[in-house]
Image (cartoon, rainbow, N blue to C red):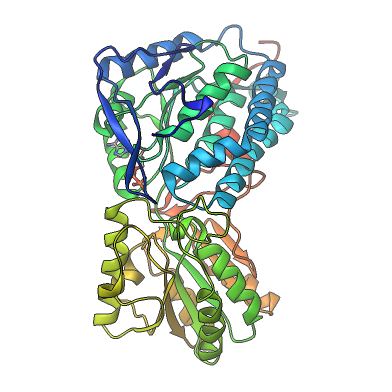
Length: 483
Ligand code: ADP
């Protein structure tokens, strides 16, 4: 069992207090590197989730809103406590998710950057008066908190995903009911423990609910006191939330699946492209929605690029993320492992060749999947059509610019994409043609706190980060000046 001063309570948190978990229902949390249960956390009832919504509702202040100074202080204090507890947060995160310690620590810093960014830009939510006088009136625009928000996060970034949502919600003055993924509740509990001890939040401003997704999802979708949900996860669940909230016309901010193209032209710096692909593709063991999923390489440079790539891949270490020298940890669960294996098997059966990694029947016990490269991938293969969410690199060859723009867009998804070319004009043309919310030019880096990030098409609705991420949580209200 995991021991930590940040995990003294393993229950929910409602109205400024840890719940007592009277009925005693719990579920197990695993360390994917060892396959062992590391904690048992409360599985909450529908009644408790509704109580969390009530608590949040009582913290909402419309007629005497929390001042900008108060909200800024909350954000600064959460930023500081995260930074001061980076080691312990990183350790907990590594233990329940499996990602290497160095990445886990980096994720805590990344999470803190969202609280930092919004603490510095919160004054953008100040009211302003517009210069024109439509309808013979001088109008002022107020940004009102949208109300109680349900924040639902996935397991692949146990602290960063909640940081994106919670920082913007608190900046806007929205109380929240927060549901972590069932695989990774401990990092969230640790965050609540830090907020409980070090941040002077009003009771009910942040509430933690854990347990069955169907029970919690039902309350958050049906309780009329929750006017907005911010969700990161699969397109499948995102669609369900759209349907289940349609009746009440709730506002939704959805960051869903991806199928990122990573395009390498023949004039690209192939060493830089290979380095960036390694950093992008194997982050979190390949289990991120911005990980390159289809690697399009110009046919003239494919052999050289593959050689550079496999040379690098063969030096990577797979193992328990708690060891400092490990590059890739275990996959988060058996279901994820089996999906990557199925994609590899399917690609090999349909004619792709294995350039690095192991054959499916050579994979050992446990959830450790070696970094794997397959060449000669085509559009009928599963790894081209679906998000693999694992350390499998499928190489697809292409000939022309037009062809690769069309192929890059040949997916229902539109989250992240990457283009490697020395020709800036070509980069501009390709970028404009790609229907993706994020396009990197000669870089494989993904979102930052300062810039809006989100998907086109089935990859979602709305943006996180940047000013746009803040505006998701407010309603613009137009009133005569002086009101
Ligand atoms: P992933 O497995 O990649 O995390 P999911 O979409 O399955 O993606 O899960 C993302 C988050 O959504 C998790 O917190 C999960 O528990 C939650 N979730 C799953 N089903 C529902 C649902 N019906 N209603 C609300 N949340 C859900």
